[in-house]
Image (cartoon, rainbow, N blue to C red; front, side):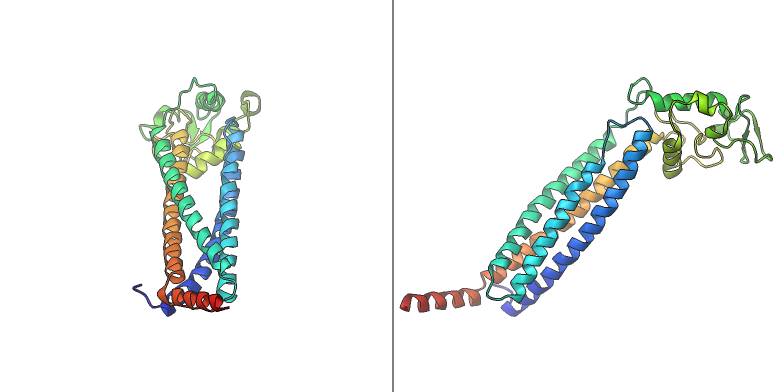
Length: 286
């Protein structure tokens, strides 16, 4: 062995606290992801895209957090209770299991993120997206047009000139979003709060078709990229979410792998093996 047994014991002692810290971080991460995915589910349902449910993705995070906590407790008991070495065995088996699990989940998450980056197609005629796109079509025909004059304080750019035709630069009582137009309640078939949230969060406009102004949040708010629809923005958001999650899982797998190796080194250290051989000799003498 290249490391002295005292060093390995110190490393083993540090490992259990690292595992305990990882379990706390895992619970915090699971809570955050659960709240985030629940919010996204709520907004997707509001968009009429209720066939997608993402909150279930938080369940593996809760399971992993609980598993890491159990493994950490086994490590603590194995370190404190010197006559109960099976706790260290359970601790190390848990490290191995999580090394394999985190590696697989990390690779899968990265692959899913890469797949989502390629799937950027959105057809306005697709029944899954018809309702959202219809709302944008109706807003385009009315907002900042003669049926609904808007308050637009910015300079008219060539891109915005196609959508902002009837407006006031001074009258702040005019509409700044489609919901404030008089025709809104009767013309729209669904609540627009989800679309407003999406435009505000991603600085986008349009679902399958891009628009130069935010029609449901504020026409004066900037659109990050006028060739970047909210459908693409949402896809890129989940691409980043899965890609970052994959990297985090790979890092955690690396940590678990190191913990497994160091614990094995401690268990099979020559000094420990020597003690085990002496114990067998004494037992055989009896």
